[in-house]
Image (spheres, rainbow, N blue to C red):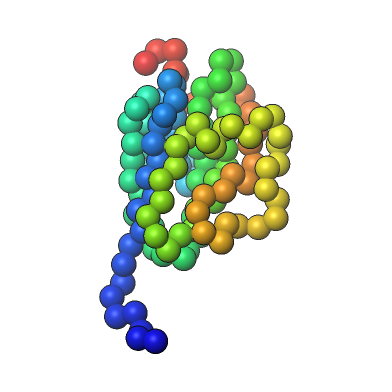
Length: 126
């Protein structure tokens, strides 16, 4: 089998298919003031460039009335992937959706929780 001669990149497309603003940031930066945060308004999308096969973890946050819902998301892939935000939060009220391990390929929600702290955005003002 021929060896891979060229490095390539994988695109992870997050699509905000909800009616509320959503923030996305690296999980390791969650809760800290950093410039590495993306705010997606309804119907907006962002493409993140990943190295194939590496594991990435993100905190995806959406306004849910008086609190914020947060999804701890793992992504790993060898090909471009598309992720609708609504699918990340469709797991009900379970605090732990998949405790087994990181995804072999694709996007997985590791945990959902509610955050009562102030967010970088206020959905009712947008």
